[in-house]
Length: 473
Ligand code: ADP
Ligand code: GLC
Image (cartoon, rainbow, N blue to C red; front, side):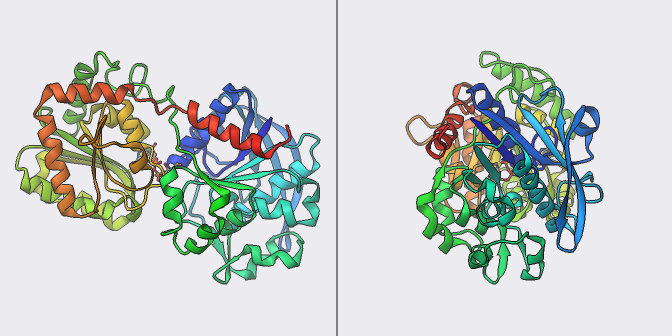
């Protein structure tokens, strides 16, 4: 079975967050399970693209409104990622270094989707399934079903995965001329709240949609940035499949980015050494519990609460613990985190920016990883932390609820809290400090965490079952 994934991100080609990780890993595991999975990405002028070799396999022209554009389909030559990777290159539109936030982002992603459809509609080898990720590829299910030019694709099942329902790819009806001629009776499928909403369109038109955790599927009907009614109506078409992690990339026994590799048996010594080096780098003491946060500094992640929460915890548990933050995002939050009073200096470190290597070192060196997320469709950070024997401390929401069992419960291995407030964070951090004081307990929990299985095997199987239910292949 031939499954083509379309996405804006794919690690290590282009990653901003977990979408990149998932699209960089899932196809690899699908291929191992016998599915011919490939990824189609916009062309980005970034390291991976510059350092690898691509063949030009197809070129043609597309139309966006009143303009024509040329596009090239490039295929990576050596299957470096463990699956076929295709890039859509459009001079002047898809040939830039950044992944998001250009003022003509709508034009970029519509051209991306149109070029893809034009290419496969002219190709002899059609996919058995088109798998779209997030709103950047959300118009595809509509376009294959209702556009005259692509009518030869109409029988191909489309699956959409929602990694993040907050961003929806909205644009005004004034840009409708960007889309090729379609059945006008179907125009309502594009609309939500008097504008074109790519994510809503994908949910309405895809054959099946998935969310990246079962809890998030339920939450979308209650809280999805205006799409609640839509998710209530379309619930039967959805299923929640929890993300896995790439256990080859995230492996404390082989990770070339960490200071010292370690296994389940050597976890205590290994983490001690990684923590020592990490703390040295940030001027922190290696003997106190180290609580870390890694992630996008945005409201969804609860990042706006961090500076107050850290200051309150450091005041409450004077001299008893250290915090370390790695992240970037909202400038106000960045500033608050950089400007935390000097009195906390020896107990607090921060790196504002994106640094893949540092993230690995932090997962390996930390004792606890805190995620005070307001919304967390799945969350990969807690899974990486656990894989490195770091105890997750999470707000019970979305995928965090589905993957972290509190120590108070049978078989538990993490710390969690129900209501998101500074006081709950202070309380849960107090619990973390207590656990840390018992080295034997710490050791047992670390070993338990490292023996948990969050690999892709089971989740890839669930996607395969979904594909099989839709395809005749
Ligand atoms: P989201 O996709 O919502 O950002 P996830 O938990 O699914 O959240 O995935 C976040 C991914 O991005 C993880 O791989 C995490 O390590 C990485 N990440 C986030 N911020 C940074 C950063 N500042 N530096 C390095 N890696 C980061
Ligand atoms: C999104 C979500 C995150 C999820 C990731 C990968 O960006 O915010 O929770 O883990 O996608 O699916």
